[in-house]
Image (cartoon, rainbow, N blue to C red; front, side):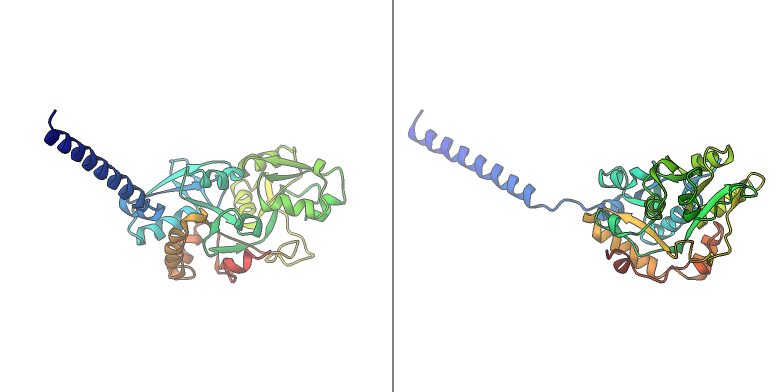
Length: 292
């Protein structure tokens, strides 16, 4: 091979190396597509729900509905996203599976508390409620609150795994041995019907909905000693939508839509189908609720 050929061979090799190196640098420099960008590009978002009335559940005809999925449909439609894919999982798995990428948004009526705020980013609240107790019709064991369970070792309380009611029950003095943990609200309600537990603690909205579904066998405990609207423990619960921490732009875009929607006649009509009323409108901000 002559000197001329060697020179061009060396130049060619150098040129290929430069092109390849530039391509690699360009690929590395290109920013990854965010979740919001992907949702806007595809027109589809995935929501996670836990099968709890009235927040997010599947009807006999297969439609996923409830306060959270229906609000999500309106908000994302206004963002130009027409398609929603709903993924059901156990309540206790919602945060883990959101972070793992199984879905993009938790739409399940999740209570905003500091412990959860450390793991995910919440939207602004969409509702407020209090705790309620589902009992057998006639309330034969006279269970009106956590304190009744704590003071009577023979009583058993049902709670759903991962819920705020589990933590509140323990904080109220209910013993571990008095608790039965269930994967979802319907299973817990069935346990109340057959006497496996004496009461099931959940949000007042959930308890109302479950009691109305089977008035012959189930009822909502209605104590006289404290106002029903603030709950037996004097605490209000505020719920919203959950997002991955790195999806702040998605959460912010969603919040902008919420700000123009919550409290409007359209919103009140929508949530009224699920037992919510003006008394359930939120009056606090997520930043405050996330404070320890």
